[in-house]
Length: 414
Image 1 (tube, rainbow, N blue to C red):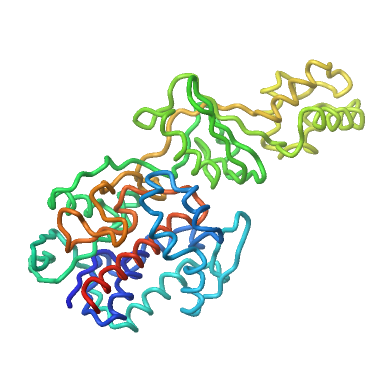
Image 2: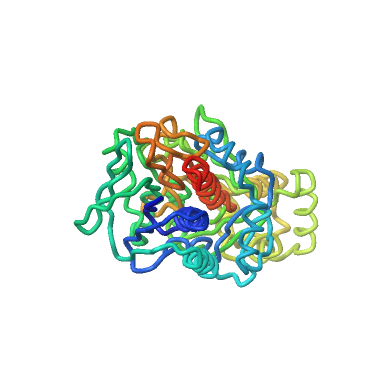
């Protein structure tokens, strides 16, 4: 049996190796001059390849169509992913939030392990070749690449989404799906920065850990997450912000936030207002004649001091001994809810993953075959599935790839 796999990313490499290992002849088409280009930049170059949690917890972190992924995630779990990479010779480690990384902190090690495994299984990788068409019939598929039409028994489309176009994810898979008669849920940005109205350039590079960030909008459900965030020159990013950008879709219109939206940072989530007030009293008494800007370093990073004091309506040069009870309450309020005005979410080009894609109603969740063109399969990010940060999106790639390959192996008795 001859199989074409289009896209040598996480899902494509995994599916190709599994099929070739079962005896199929596999041609793996990659438009770039090397495999795993996007994989090498995930997790800031460290590659958070999965999350050491239960399948149910994975699905709890899937934003779009979690029920569709139930079978795949339960058939190839996070623990299966970890065992898979350890068997490929990649030592792994677990960090905060159950996030799993290679011990080396090198995403390239994950890409190289997948590539070496595919080669060892006999996968024929065709680099620098863009597939321009996929046709399907009752007895097979045609893949058009480089002006040449090749015939296969099955074709697996693992072309990714539309984010990070420089890595090759330019939405080709959507065009193939449309040509086969499939519906495409409009691709949109997912896991992107949030830009703010306020000038936060003085905070650029500041990382905050163990904070709770909330997004509020009139008439909408408040979304709150605890963890780490990062200030940029014109906005905020980091794990908590990226996930919130995915949860706040009903607060945005074309990427822009509805009027009245607020982003609040609880800088002291471990302290309730009563405990925080006692802490402030101690700091103010200890400082007594000091100016407030010299009291605050005990409470927040230096670059944040002007923002917190401004949020509380307190002058930086005001002495600690002159602070009233009302001002102390306002300061506690600013520490528990430092407010900024979100303007828009990042563009699809900035997205770590793409939301939207091939309509999952037209895909069989058992093996990811196209219900309209049964010999064509769609796996990974090209589908209308996406999840929060924490390794869940790569787990989706591995799980869908394995379910697809195993389904083909069973169907064609390999």
